[in-house]
Length: 317
Image 1 (cartoon, rainbow, N blue to C red):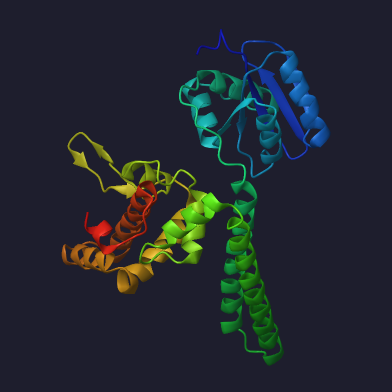
Image 2 (image 1 turned 180 degrees about the horizontal axis):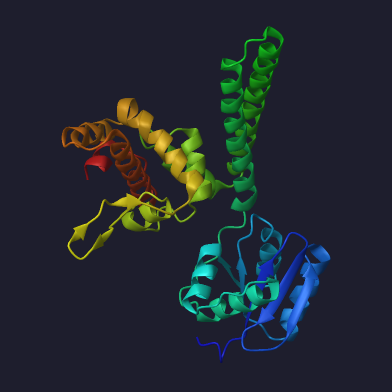
């Protein structure tokens, strides 16, 4: 649908303010980035008969207004910052401020051809909870590193106590997250399907369920690309470059890589065979593990798509 038959708006997100522009029109709006401002924004968009709204991801500051607009039945597109800047470079636009960015996002919104369905709203609090759990894990690793380089007994005891405290908190948070997910029957069934794959532990199953809600509806190539595990060509003329992975969902990729490391050496015979075959072919250790992580995600995608738990026969097929 063209921009002439659908009114589109663009929102530039700030910590305190939201700047709004309409595609092809002079109307502008600035509201506070809080609940009252979101309601005023929604009313303003309805008065201008806006159907589609584009907004740039901005470190989480956009999440509340996106939820409010979707609740009010607007079609919302969340752009990656790289998409908006690439569009500006394509049009040779160098100037940048909040009002210009809002107008640019409005143009991007009108030009968008493929609109993805909004994610399951139930997953938003689970995603935030999972991020907290991952951050606790990162803090434990940092504190252990500090403890190893510490020579003062008193300070060493402090780091030991902090690590023990965070481990207790980590266990509690994991149990609470799993319990909250299992209150939803469909999510609980999907979680069990994911966890049935050899080499996929509870943490990895949670990451796939929450970070990739599209699992089971994608092709193997799409799943790998979303996780940032798809190798891309880098060729030009007679030059044949090295294929590399790029983009994707970083936290999900880290979880899959960590799972593939253990699965390839112990828990999944299919991945172990694949890992040894790649090493025998002269591939580097890290490259082989990335390939195993990609294959592990493909196993999960197949299991969820079929709706049947993992079996050795499933892997063979």
